[in-house]
Length: 253
Image 1 (cartoon, one colour):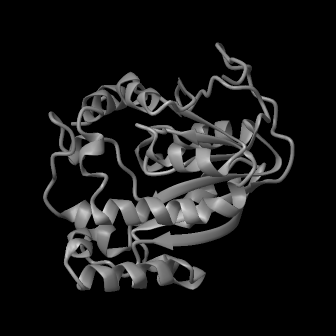
Image 2 (cartoon, rainbow, N blue to C red):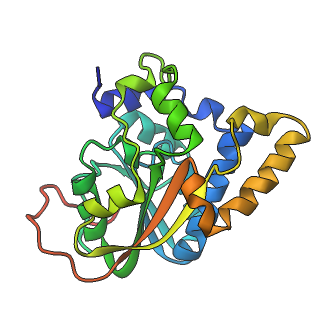
Image 3 (cartoon, rainbow, N blue to C red):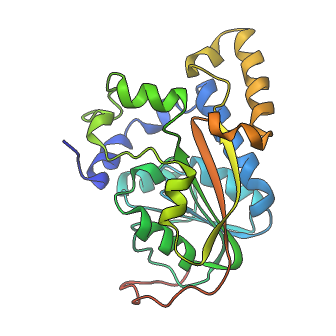
């Protein structure tokens, strides 16, 4: 049985940061930022489903201005403790003006959004023509994807296991079929290509070797089809088709 995303993430916020210092999570976060860096340096950036602000912290160091949006008040409370610029909002109805960002990204959470097509339209709407939208997919054909879909369900938050949370495993072709007409695929990169199990990155010697191999593999675009996480960079090609004005749209915080 699925649960409400906001309820789940409010519960998850109490322990979300606890394991983020693990070598595996640290590597994934660093590789995501390496992919984003050339796009966001000196730009105005939006991080959708920002959570407790771990990615947003890195973006804030690179960007001219970085803003985070999240549905969960619990997650945002922790992000504000980091003195980050955040606001509450739904990815499918962003409370932000049209064409107000150079880049909008959604990492880790995009596969959990219940209305991905609407979210993509919203991400495109708030990005200027020529800017970029970046989303991260869970690859259904990776070792990680196969194990997660067919293996035992792990408890992610205090009360819920991962099987209760809406989760999709999409190919790039699946994503392409969802895109609004003003977005097109610009590049595709992979993360977690050579690491069979995240805990191996904490093993002395072996962990260092796997870390270096993973960093090398991420820089080779041809290997993305093997990746557990597929990062798709989309380019905003034209002015978006006018949509109904979102209620509660606010100026940038």
